[in-house]
Amino acid sequence: MEVKTLTVKTGEPGELRAVAEVSDGRIVNAEVCSTTVPLSWETLVLEKPVEFAIVAAERVCRGCDASAGLAVAEAAEDALNVSVPDDARRARELLNMANVVRAHARTLASAVPGAAEEAHEVVRAARELLRMVGGKPHHPPAVTVGGLELERLPVERLESVAKDAAEAAEGLRDRVESAADELREEVSVESRIRPTELSVSDTYTGEVDPDRIEVLPPSEFYRMRTTRSLATNHVARYDGEPALVGPAARRGGAEHPADHHVARAEELTELLDRIADTASSLDATGEFRAEAEAGSGEGTAAVEAPEGTLIVRLRLRNGRVDWAEMITPSNFKVALAGDLLTGLEVEQVETALRPLGLSGRCLTH
Image (cartoon, rainbow, N blue to C red; front, side, top):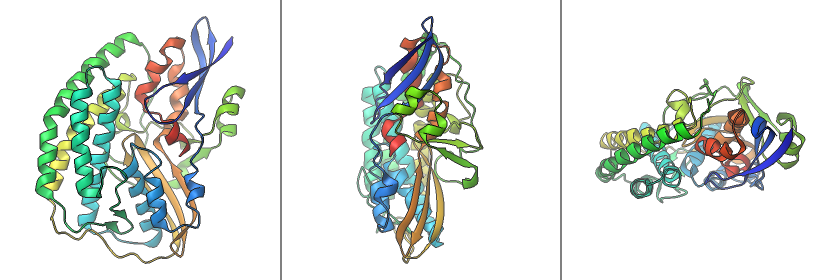
């Protein structure tokens, strides 16, 4: 038996390693971890105003910036018992959907041969949508406790941009489905992944039971000495079991790694239609924010980020963060990544893992 440590390139920020026990060229046991230096968001925001925690969260991951900001804002609203106006909640849903579209298109642009032109057209449209709703195409400054800092929403332009991007999205989906068929022939592996109750909604927010979430440090989750010495990430489980989150979970599961890319392509196509429908039904001058006073309390929020359920828990004291926790999609998905590699040849590790959507930065935030 030989132990090999492999660098896994996913196209996402941060460093990933797979530690594998190999016999006769095949993996009999594996664990996946991040070796990325942690940003320590939980420590950075301590004693800071909650609005700073929103800004900082939006800079944890390039793909989930809007989703992370929304999760912090909604955890604060839960802690302070703030009721967000209906117009603001629907505009937030639109913002999060645009975030998912942008992230999926970026991922597919680099992962699927021949998809770059159509994918980048969708990315440009998503950036325009994020700018109109969030104030900027990245790290949207409009996200705030109580709703969104908006005076007017350009609903007609939002609808038009989403509809114009739909044709490119359909072409992208066709390319992804073709590439997925080739990947299934190249790598014969069963994902052995089942969706769980943790997949809280198809696009935006939902309820989770914090008592059912278990967050383990590397020393408690990993069993291989090499992995424990390398890992900088925590690992999350739900009801004591690894949980599938993300686009494949939202669509019912994955039987092969290629199914994750297909789920992304299908999801972004459907979301562009939903963005157009949502925009057409919004009031351009609606009520987009409720007043929120600095107060104290504890709150939890779950947002369906592009790569899965993102959970933020906060304890506030006079409007400042007294304690914080962020559980990212990668913290959940890394718990099942090792099992996905069992039985594969070493050369197939990156091909099998990349569609899962793991990010070293997301793991360490």
